[in-house]
Amino acid sequence: MISKPQYGAVALVGRPNVGKSTLLNHLVGERISITAHRPQTTRHAVRGIATWGAVQAVFVDTPGIHGGGKRALNRVLNRTARGSLADVDVVVLLVQAPQFTGDDQLALDAAIRSERPVILAVNKIDRLSDKASLLPYLQSLPGVESVAHVVPVSALKGDGVDQLKHCLIDLLPHGEHVYAADELTDKSERFLAAEMIREQLTRQLNKELPYAITVEIEQFDVSPSGYRILAAIWVERDSQKGIVIGHQGNKLKSVGSRARERMSALFGVPVHLEQRVLVRRDWSDDRDALHSLGLGD
Ligand SMILES: Nc1nc2c(ncn2[C@@H]2O[C@H](COP(=O)(O)OP(=O)(O)OP(=O)(O)O)[C@@H](O)[C@H]2O)c(=O)[nH]1
Ligand SMILES: [Mg+2]
Image (cartoon, rainbow, N blue to C red; front, side, top):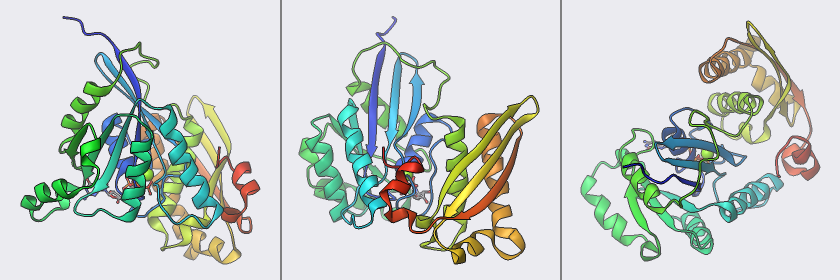
């Protein structure tokens, strides 16, 4: 029997750091959205495409929703997350067992207000030392009666992801596929390259600093021997520039070589990467500067 094609968009929402980007990568099967052990890693609504036979789902990874919105960057991130709920068919709300915080409540409220079917995915179950605590935790979650499915998962290990797929297939509308079966994202390789550098900066630098960093690709040349990429890393202060470059340039080298490996793996070609570090004062609190760097739309 040939099944009717299904197609739809799925938003992945939740407070910062619950594992939205990790789950997107698992669902798509490639590392297209950057992840780090730190809140507010994702700044743009990244789309990842998965095609499972007759079913095609476009996942929209969003910046974590949270209550503290003082700096312009925070406000822009929150708007991006809430805005992406308007255009989707299904919402997957992630929470992280065994917690349920005020920011989880904000995200749940936004999901329910979207009037889309909601799947509540309870992530990081691999970290629960006492598996028996999962059931009472699930029963204690507020708003469970308003969601279509509740699925415990580990985005990192893949547990429960198949069950999540089945819940999605249950909810996605019928429709023709929009993307070819081998397409993984709507983002350009240029965008992905900048994100992979930011991922390594976020992972390899000390706490706090990464919020003051953004990456711009100045040149992206394609040749038969591979890609040649020139990147500018923007920081807010001269002192931060020193930290990014590191002793004898070691930090920048290590960021570059790891990012380059990831790029080569995803793009399937050799990558030559050059990076420079530039100072632009207070960009994370300057809406015009956010715009000129492609954030905030
Ligand atoms: N143990 C465990 N860790 C996980 C799991 N899923 C994600 N993580 C880790 O949690 C951290 C945050 O993951 P991300 O995927 O970046 O989280 P996010 O929700 O996209 O975060 P923001 O983009 O900052 O909102 C990373 O260190 C992940 O490796 C999981 O199922 N189990
Ligand atoms: Mg993320």
